[in-house]
Image (tube, rainbow, N blue to C red):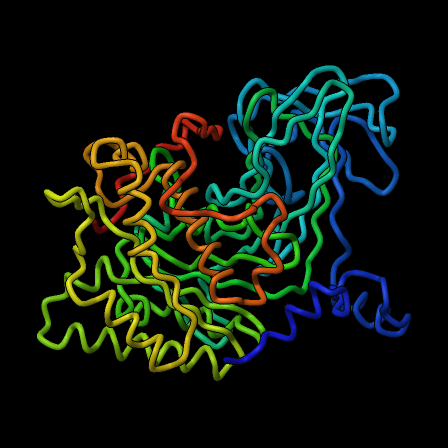
Amino acid sequence: MQKDHWLKAVLSGRAVSRFTASGLALAALAAQAQTNPPPLKFTFGLPAPSYTLVMPDMMYAKNPGFGFEPGASVKVVLGGNTEANTTHAISSDKLFYFSVVEPEGNYKVTVTLGNPSAAAETTVNAELRRLMLQQIHTEAGQFQTRSFIVNIRQAAISTGGQVRLKDREKAAEAWAWDDKLTLEFLGVNPSAARLEIAPVDVPTVFVIGDSTVCDQPGEPFNSWGQMLPRFLKPVVAVANHAESGESVSASLGERRFDKIWSLMKKGDYLFIQFGHNDMKIRATNALQKYHDDLGAVVDKARSLGGFPVICTPVSRHTFGADGKVTNSFNGYPDAARSVAREKNVPLIDLQQMTAAFYEALGDAASHRAFASMTEGTHHNDYGSYQVVKCVLLGIRQNKLDLARAIVDDFTGFDPSHPDPIDAFTLPKNPGRNAPTPDGN
């Protein structure tokens, strides 16, 4: 198995962002300055040198290319001297969105969170509810500066043509494909003082799969792919190209893989999880085609210098009389395992891990990990939070260099001992209710 030396270099500090001065010669910096835009820097409520001032009434418009999304109700909060001279913030009694026009790419986002006069607990999502920062608590007058990486994309493919988007991707999921970087601030008195956005050259973790993986646009649905950024340090980007109702063959036909191939560079990862919808294809050779398509995708990723990782499909809520979760996928998980063996590819066995997770809760209680008591496929926030921990466990078990990018507060996970349901909290967005995902 190849070693991803580029990620090692990034994590060890030997590789430097195109937009970071440290270690770069002046000539190189000058050359970059001719092609790369400077970072965008915003201050909320009070002017600051080198920052663009944003006031509460500045709604998003193409010109000037930034602003709050409609429905925002924010106010400026002023205070006395506090740490880092931050004496101001914007705050709200409900969630709000802030958008900035940016071209396709990876961006390092740095936010200063806090409120000069009141305690705050701020969660930050990006694009379609991708969890970036979880419940950052600040006391009155206290500020915390945090960074994370956001990937934004458009449907056009640089090599020609574009991804064939579904109607839902043009409506409820449009923020996943537009020309803006959108941040969602929510929680208890969500507050922010400053924001910086800069293009960054880091390894990308591409993710592709079905509705159990994709960025679900609204409550009560959530998927592990949109939880993943919260658990990775700002040295890699997560680009989630999964979509509801997808099979391997459909994603190939709709050019979702072509989009990834056009962006993939040496050292990038590709996490692949299909099976839920592939098993419904009625062609007599469907299982063999699934096997062959997975193998072809693995070969293509490797030819581009990428590192493919195969995931078996997450289990459905299919309990048998013995209290164990049954395999509802027929031979498809075994086919995925077979490709992983044949191609010497890391395998994360989410079917087995998630079965252990559900069984630990029991038939009745495990419904609380899904979007509703009648839903047996699609998870809620709690469920997807546990599933992504299974993915992180698999990254460590496979000894991927990507494990070095996992955040320090992830200390490990045992699917047979999941986090207590009643102790889990995450702010919800009741205003973004989603259509039922395609597939089951």
